[in-house]
Image (cartoon, rainbow, N blue to C red; front, side, top):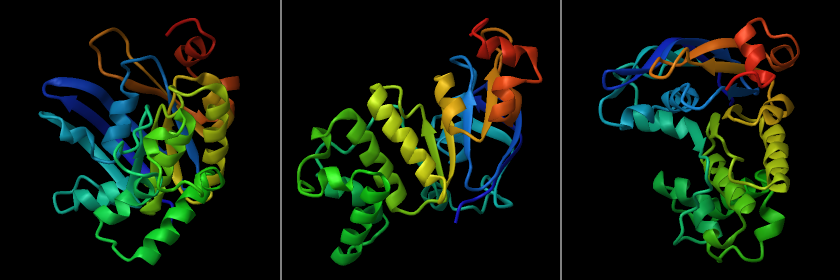
Length: 258
């Protein structure tokens, strides 16, 4: 069941340094939201705050409220492991476990969660690989190393591994930046397909990609080096790219800065 995400005045810190300042946005279920903006403006920091990976770094913390279906995931009594299980993450570079086979990569999260029954694992592996548009390419070599696949296939394997544990939210941090154009289009097609099941947030530097795949777009920026990132504008993607409300958004999208 896809979830609704609401950020209210979220600020993230690395020690005394404020990385993002007072970000508020609502992400509806079964939508794709793109976060765009220049490097160092806090997009990835905000993304990592949503599944509580930000705080893994020493001295890192957030202020404000982040709710998933009205449950504040930063409440003291919230099970952090359960939050991270509910919110899957796909990283910039494909990172299949190098010593594991394609099959073992696909079911790694389930095994970590204590699933041992082979029939359950087999079914989950096929289902997740089919969902990631990878099954037909790998079904005859599931015992081969996942690291032996092409870059685009590896990234789809990582997506299969993420969705096998049935999260409700999938976060993607520049998932296509290391891929060729054909693999990038395969991942974009996959996002459209996965939107029926998950709430998806993607960080991307590729403006055309944001315009192609997302329902809503958030533009982050900073005033000057050392300042915290701020959410300048958040709206329907069509409006952001055709008629943004803020001049700074228009300048970034048209290439006048950033």
